[in-house]
Length: 444
Image (tube, rainbow, N blue to C red):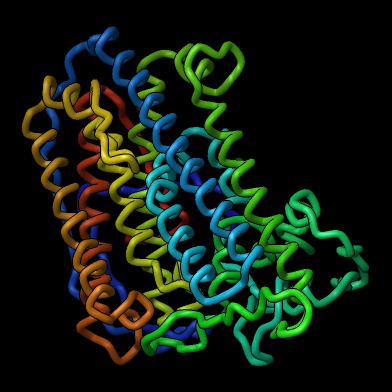
């Protein structure tokens, strides 16, 4: 979902996670969950920062960003090629190949999101690529009783089926489906649930609705939905094909734009402006991005919301049942930034000057605590991955009658909250006070 970051203050020195099941929009009786508290070791007064070492860390942070956005773009191009192959020869084989290319594209992209918070150029751009949850009835056919955002006038507009859509009193010409037209429809009528572009619009087109609720199974769109002429199912195959093509091409174009923002030796891109700032400001942005993705976004928006509401509509990759992997790679991105390491999609590893080395020079205990917490978080999220690989995906774990599954999600949230406290302690060890990671208005 397109969101405006909330610069809220959160005290993380004695945090508790208290999660309970409730119905969406209408809270039920609350049942307290086991609390997860953490008290990170107090850092000693930070020594004077080595400016040369700090600048090297920020420069390597920009190298990491360039690498991961370049990989996201390269994976996006492979998705584009798979979509083109599907449209050239619609069938189960080409549809499955396109789905696999989408899943592969999520691996590097989800590792980019740690760069959102603190870097406005990324956060302002991100919504067009990864906005969620979306009301898929804006895009294509859905079951008549599907759940959508209350009061959304575009929830059943169905761009694929109509050359003109009416949203409230406004009539909008959608006769020509282009990336530019689709981008203009994001947040149509002021509703954040109206998402017309990005990974999740493409995901819906490739998988269709997941009609299984909290039971096993993902979307099952037939390949015949992309057949031209006779054999077309779902009607309007020509416009569905045009939509998928336009949305995928736009995604690749947008990713190329962000690669350009992180290229070295450019005088007027974002990287140049970041490196022109003080090293201290760069370190703050790095740590703020880590803490905000860890706390408000991943622990809060992407996990706590869905768990508390037992809501598959609030699941991140809800059409493909890929949510476990998206959460895992979000957390991997946080760890990448702290350790200064990133495993590229070609199998090579980029490594260099790290926040960890700076923190260790100031407070080895704080560095050790944060590295342990990062490992613990990865292990808790790996439990969700293994659960999905064994047939119980995230949407099943959050079911109201699945106490054991819910506990797995709670444990992952608790680990994310705990590591955020350690991130604040790492910031303090570098003389960065009042980091205040974004809570997205969640209480932990």
